Image 1 (cartoon, rainbow, N blue to C red):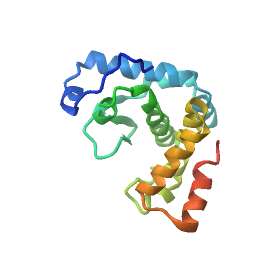
Image 2: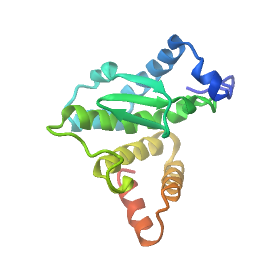
Image 3: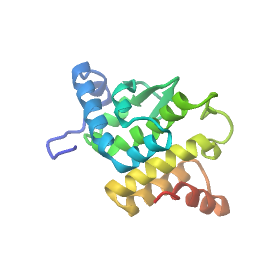
Image 4: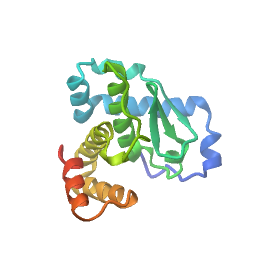
Length: 173
């Protein structure tokens, strides 16, 4: 969890953190998410033992996005470390663990986030629904709604489509 002693750091500093420190951070995230109801529900839905969370390959890397799952490997952007509050970014872990479950339990490849409209991709919708549910449970419904509003604004979704998409993304809250 974040504490007042956590400090902001530059991207250069984040990339220079020792692997043991990064692994400790990932281990804390796993431990916390393993106890989270949203994550437990995800594992139940996919009929995967929650203990499997310990074996998900997770690392930090250089990305254009906050996080991604590529062939069952979760990669978190170093940028998540720069604000000094990695705890609030555990929601990206929830989103990516959804993709890990999709990719490792399905009978066919998942649709890439690069294929078609990102927010209309059903795999992404599920990831965002779980992420938003996690945010609501841990930080409140207002924070979850704020995250969805910022997401829709970032992806230039407006008008009637915005209302409908917001309803879809908030459906588990």
